[in-house]
Length: 238
Image (cartoon, rainbow, N blue to C red; front, side, top):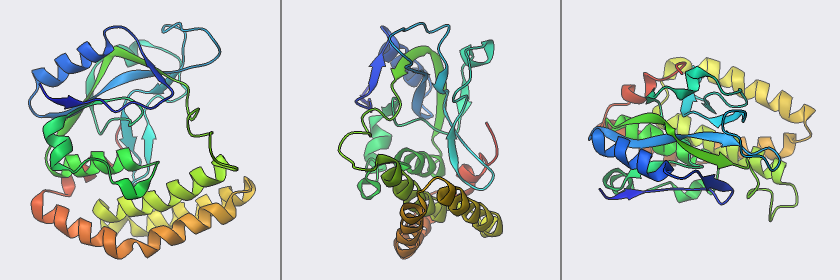
């Protein structure tokens, strides 16, 4: 079955991970992609039973922000059970090539951060689903590749997240959530000021607002070809 395996440079696959993902994808034609159990690399040890989670699939808050389910939590029975999830983490996943082609891949204008959220949203709008496959285990060093090549990687991270989050939310969020989104964005500026990243975060938000016409055109295109509510159903769910 033709498929695409996105992997970050700072990931390492356990034996059998790809086979488990491919089997799950082949077993359900409605799946657009599958997510492995991604574990956080800490030190030299590779003990899957003792490691903390990096991601057990992507989820959305009620105001449309994305987060990795289980991030930072210790291993428990909950994370050994497969289930449907909102979307896959771009650090490591297996996507059906047919869907990847239909979506024209990741939005390259994002550069990094939220490009996987955007792809998940667009796939959901087209009626595709995603699943978590815990038998497939991948290790992730977490931002190791991102730290190279930037004088202030944290500030660049803040800028891109702020910009790309606005671009993605504009494509599918209901207008009824606007006041809540504005409150959250205001809070993020306060946190950025406390962390010394206010200028980068503010720049990112302004860049996201400047891209609103483009994002809204994409929203109209998506609404014409699919169902925006298919992505909205996952707001506030894990």
